[in-house]
Length: 218
Image (tube, rainbow, N blue to C red; front, side, top):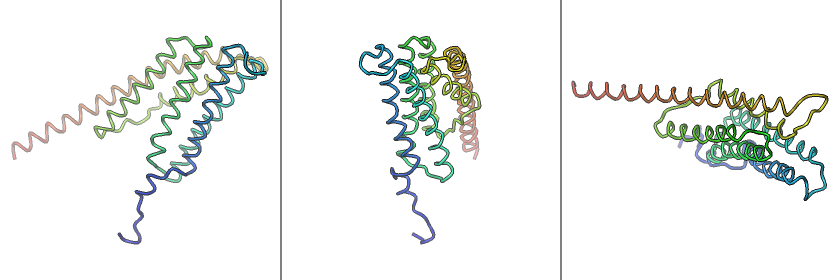
């Protein structure tokens, strides 16, 4: 191999880098959120902290976890750090963080069960859709509606965890509004993703048919 060439194979399997550290830290924060909400469910029979304090612990921990999600992706793109471990762990950490939080908030009666089911099924569906597209060599880019869904969801969840009205700001009401907006955008964007993938698959099939026709004529 030429000395000027860089062997990227080793870098792809690297684990110890800053984006992966941030992702792993996010995973470690998930039990803190879950235990805080768990103690709220049982009216704080096990620890000596007020229910309101536990809600804020869960909410702020979720905010910190969301911030690490932004920065690990930003740093990875900025420095060109793409690893197998990071590509696997980052989306898994995101799903664990959001899905587990939604389920426990529903258990606390703060989110309707149908909203939670729809949001969780959407995550599963999109994961399967991207996997299918990847196997066929088709890219499914993130559209703007999907980004809005994520933004509304990340705002709603900590508000619903805190479940308070600091300085007269109605977190329960605002959190409910944002989670309904997240539900709307999640369903709508999933439909657009599906249509986009269908259109690309249709185009690929058409190209293959034309190629076969040209080959037969030749």
